[in-house]
Image (cartoon, rainbow, N blue to C red):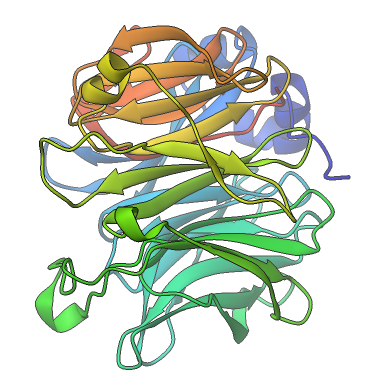
Length: 361
């Protein structure tokens, strides 16, 4: 089983006295009183970019500068390393030691590749997986990086789809879960979507040792414009996925669902008003394992939705203007926004799309 993510006390112990001594008194005070530690990419008012470590009430504890805008993040409880991936079609990822014992390492996508903004560490922390685009061949790949050798790129696996976006790893480390958004892009055209009339969205399970395809779930024929974007795994190994719809605005397709290995995908049957509130766009998804809930955010709809994983029932909806990242917290979920909100605290910067939690749930 995957080692649980660190709680705040374990995080501080691992970080050590040298790191905590660098913190401002207010940041240290917030950290000592926080149940968990989070991190997210941001853009400052001067246009610079970075990653911030935060307490659960949104107090900024520490910052690391980035060369450009980031998107998703990954964290290894084994090594204490965190990775921030460039926003598509960026070509850098920065890995930094949350203990500040070694200098950050910046890696670059291989020739003919760019990052798709997401990745994950293997449970033992020895590998970093990154979702990438082989743009000349129009196929998604998972780049493999050796965390024991300054994140040297050592190979890649096919994702058996195009427009690969989010991905994660099963608790036992044997399986990669990949969301192939189905949208063709090329860096020559920036972020332009080139195939909206013939998209190929899918969800794939890939052997983490051999790269072989275990199973692949294409979206139903009537939902080929439903781009599979983000994934998370619950405590029973069930995969939860969230989508963004590229079809007519007046359509109300299902936007989230789940499946387990060997099963067909099942879409959540949300109330029409909830689906309408998500505005055909789920920007992030997170599972809170200990509380048995899954959370969705929509920046276009300005909402955050909490769903019971056992029944699929909506148990909470919150209005959150410019809702961005979401991560499990003691109170259910921590939610950030593009306008600088992290739960109830306002920061003088803009948070990016995703949050990673360093504390166990």
